[in-house]
Length: 252
Image (cartoon, rainbow, N blue to C red; front, side, top):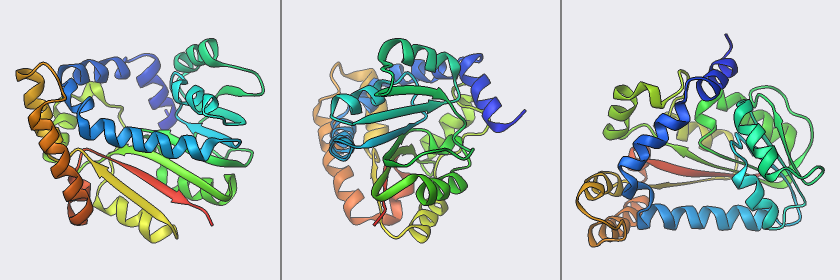
């Protein structure tokens, strides 16, 4: 069984998405915290601006919500690809518009046809052979002046390592969160890379307040947000120990 076949089985048959979501709901403050929401808003603003009037490839599109949002933000054409047939069936039913927003079963590890001005993905690179795939996407599929933009999990944090080890059913067999060496590789192999980590103090604080407080917009998480911004800006050596990061690779 190939890597893509294992990924497809995990999502179509083994319920990895559902198990992962159930655990996220138990600690919802991490995902609805000021730090998370601020970062997600900034990331979406960036890609929506880049999508206007452009051709967009949504890598690992899942149910197609982000593909649809980029179309609504003004993208001329959006192609969403994924290996999970169950996800794509729902995406086509909900958002599919022939010639405008399309969804196809495609293995991102294999060569793709076409040029795109913006290639995006959320939690997809760590599921694939990302070094080979990113290099190929940059060289063969990204137009001049284009942008690669991804949001990915980081693996240096001890809480993340514990979650990965103790809850295997929430993960696919081959997924690997980004480590310090991966971030170093990105900077060494592309001329213009921006990496923005988020959720350092927010992760442990959000886990605790999920059980103690009603709202994620609380004093402790607002303080964690300020601390996270400071650490992300001034202590790059800690970036792989955050929960997640956005990765932007611009092509001249």
